[in-house]
Structures are given as C-alpha cells and as structure tokens.
Image (tube, rainbow, N blue to C red; front, side, top):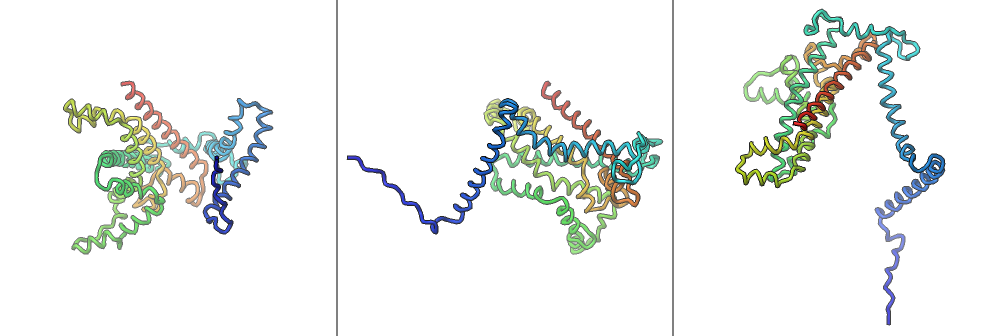
Length: 347
C-alpha cells in the first residue's frame, strides 16, 4: 500500500513576510525585463546571425565609452589647436601649434622662471616630485603592511578594515579632516601648545605643506594598494615557503627569492595605477592648501583647472594643450613601466 506524500499547505497572504513579497516583486520585474530583451534580441539575431550577436550586446557600452570618453578626448585635442575665449568649437579660431609653442617657450626648461607659462612648469616639477615620493613611500608602506597582515596575527581582519577605511572617504572629506587638524588653531597645534611648544603654521611653510600633502595622500590611498598586494601574496603557494625553510633559507632570503619575483605582476599593476593617480592629483590638494604657500603645492591638473575655469580670462586652448601634454607623459610612463615589467619576466 502506497501513501501519498504529504503536501505542505500554502501560507495565507497575510502570513507572507515583507521580504518575500519584495523579493517576488523584484523577480517579477526581472523576468519581465528579460522577456522584453528576448523579444528585441530575437529579430536582431535573425537579421545579423548568431555569430554577430556579441557586437549587439557590446554596442551599448561602446556608445557610452564613445560619448563620455572618446568624444571629449578628441574634442580636447581639437581645442588645443584653437584660441580665443569662446566655448563652442565653431566660435574658436584655429591657431595651429601656438598653444604648444607657448607652453614650451623656455630659455631653460629646468628653470620655470624663464618660461612663458612658468606656472605650468612649476606645477610640472611639483608633480614629478610628488609622484616620486608619494608613489615610492606608498608602495613601500603598502608592501610592508600587506606582508605583516598576510601572517597569522591577532586582529588581522580588524587591521585590514582600519587600513582600508580611509579609501572609502572622499578626497574632499579627507582634506577637510586634515585641514581641521593642521590649521593654526587645529588639534595638532592645540596639542603642541599644551606640552609647552609653539604653534607651527603648517600651511604657510612650503616644506611643511609639501610634507603633509604627500603624507595625507599616502594615508588616504595606501589601503587600496595594500589589499591588491595582499591578494597577490595570498596567491603564492605556501609549499614554496616550506621548501625554502627546509633548505635553510631565512625570512629575507624567502622574501627576495620567492615573494618578490612572484609578486612582480601585482606590483606592476600597483605601480601603474598609483602613478596615474598621483599625476592626476588635484581635489585633495586644492581643498587642503589651494596650491600654496606661493606655488609650493601647485600641480599640473590645478594649472589646467585654473587656466580653463578659474582665471578671469579663460584660455581653453592653453588648458587643453597642457592636458594633452599631461596625457602623453602618462602614456610614456605607463609604457615604460609595462616594458620594464616584461623585461623582468623574461629575466
């Protein structure tokens, strides 16, 4: 004798939870949207064939990229060959290479005071100094932090979150927090006065201003690159370290012979990303120091912004030419880093 399986009675509508109702609503919307997509895709597939449907699905992303990235980039290049103060392209006269000639019109490129656009070259050298020390210091600290947090230490998850937290903050928020700490009547000066020392005007001294701009940038971004390096460290097989221990290698020898070579691809990604971001530094420094004191913390992107939008005479052509030069420098630096990475892989 067979017995029928017992069926669970359906819950009455009033017993269904709010979460289940919301989930059912989202599923219904998703199913309806997919049905509409299927109705649209079927005639397209019949018209162009199944092998070409990939282009149909990629087309929306290509349109977004073309409208918001490629077109503005090409328009910017065109603006660099035009002059005048008018905004619309049809109202701007073509001046050829005049903007580039003015940018590079220098008696001595190593002395910004001899250049027609001395502020651009001061920003250029300030940016180069910033990139060297900010990227160098940040990569070293991110590497050390990742190596430590890759080990079995107490509170490892907590410290990972602590180091990553500043990455979640907006650069403007970061700048405002540190400005509140470092200003004349800020927390740091209040502490110095409380222990009998004199106030330090950090934003009126060029050396202090540069130091804090670089240090705050490292503090705000290090957590992101630390996680990338930590992921690279965790991908290294532990068997290799065990074999090195059996061969009598110490920690430094294991780090130099195993960790660094296997981490080079990840380290190259970190270098490329950090250099690109460092060259484009602007918003955080703009809020923190405004480029001062004097031109101590003026960088190339700030020069581009001021030339195009902040000065009384808006020179869109000059700003566009400066941005093209900056883009070429970034391209050259990226290619050099990639080439160095390939050569290290071959070696």
